[in-house]
Image 1 (cartoon, rainbow, N blue to C red):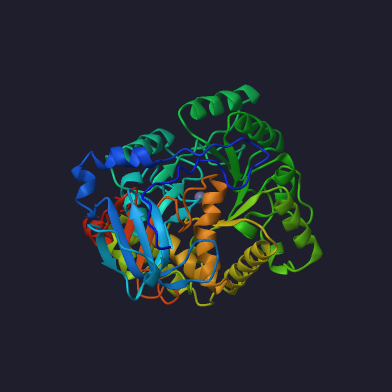
Image 2: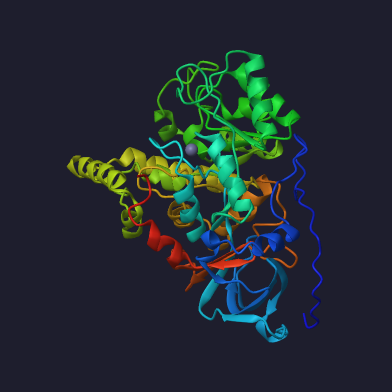
Length: 478
Ligand SMILES: [Zn+2]
C-alpha cells in the first residue's frame, strides 16, 4: 500500500453477524469521541501514557490479526487518531513525516483482548472496579463485558468515567444484577413475579445496561420472561446454568452460556426439570465425541448461542495447578494473599492429588475445542477470583486454550474478535485498516510468552503497563 490517504472511513457500530434474536446496537467510542477525549489532558489518565501523538507508526512487528489467520512478520502499522490507517509489509508502507515511530523488531502485536466474563467484583468484594480496570488495561484487556454485576450502579459510573477519559481502564460493557431462583445467592435478584422481572430489566436498560446474567437456580418460567423482556429492550442474556440444561436455555432463546461444560446438566441422569441438583460426576463418564454431545453443540451453533470459556478460574481449584505467580502475589492485598496461602497450605496437606478435577479440566477443554472446530463462537473471560486476577487470568486463559489444542492464532481469535462479535462491535478485536486501533504490544514471541506486555494502545493513547502496575502493589482486594 504505497499511497497514503489520511481519510478515515467511518465504520458503523453495528454487529458483523446479525443476531436474529435482538436488534443489538453496540455502545462505545467513535473517532470524534476519541479526539474529544484526547483534548481533556486529564492527569489521572496521562500519567500512564507513553505515546500520545496523532500519528504513530509501528515498524517490524509480528502481527496476529485476531481473525485466526497465520501471523505475519515485518509489518508496519500506521495509527492515526486511534484508528488503523494502513497495515502491510514494512518495505511497502510509506511512513508519513512527523509521525512518532516505534520499532517493534522482535515484538508481537495482537488486538486488545475482549473479555466477556470479566467481572468488576470478586467473592467477598462487591466492587473492585477501580483496581480491576487498571489491571485489565495493563494486561492488554481493552474491552470487557462484566457478565453479571454485584454493584451495577458503580459499574455504570466507572464505565462513564473511562468513556469520558477521566479514568483508565478497558471499555466496560456493563451488566445488570444477576437473576437467580430460590436457593440461590441472596445478593442476586430472586424474581417475585413477572412484573418484578419487567421492572428490573426496564430500570437497568434505561440506565444503559445491555447484558443480564442468570444464575444456577433460575426457574424455566423466569428465564423465558427474562429473555423476552431483555430482547425487547435491546439487551442480551447469558447464563451460568444448572437448573436449566443448555438445550432448554438454547430453545428459550438465550444468547450465551458461561463456563462451558462445567455448567451443563444436559447429560445428567434423573435430572429434575428446572431444579439445580445432583453432582457433576456424570461429566467424568461423558464421551465428548459422542453424537449426543455433538447434537447439543450443533443446536447451540444453529441457534447462534455463544459459549464462554473460563479455564483459568477452573484451574485455580486443582491442587497441583493452583499456584499464584509472583506478579499476582505482589498485587494481591495482604488479606487475599493470606487466603491464598491458607488454601495452598490445605492443598499441600492433602495427601492424594485431585485427579478428578484434573481430568474434568481436560474434558472441559475437549468440549470447547470441539465446539469451536464445529463452527461455534467460543469466547473467553477471566471470571476473576481466588488468586486469578483481572487481566493476568485472561493471559492465563491464552496459555490454557493452547493446552486445549488451539493454535496461538485460534486462541487469540477466541479472546479478541469472537468477543467483539458477541458484543456486536465490528470496530474492535481485529488488526485491520479502518478499525479502532486498540491493540497490545508484547515483548518477544507471544507463542512463547503472552505475559510480557510492553504497551497497550486504546482510544489513541499508548499506555505503559509498568507505570500502571507499580502503583497497585498490595492493592487488589483490600
Ligand atoms: Zn462469573
